[in-house]
Image: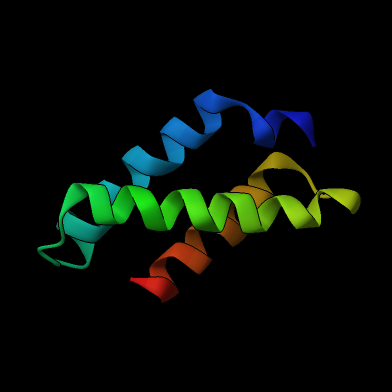
Length: 70
């Protein structure tokens, strides 16, 4: 899915992860650490692009992976 690979999608995942980590999970983690985790999981999730998943499914999978790493 080309839509998943776009920088705008990565930026949205970073923003969503920062919000999730600080507001929902109440963790006090450095923004750069979160960004690094998001980028690693985003790259890892791209391995699923050979399958026919939609952008929402890929983003949900990626966010779940990020949450588990944090």
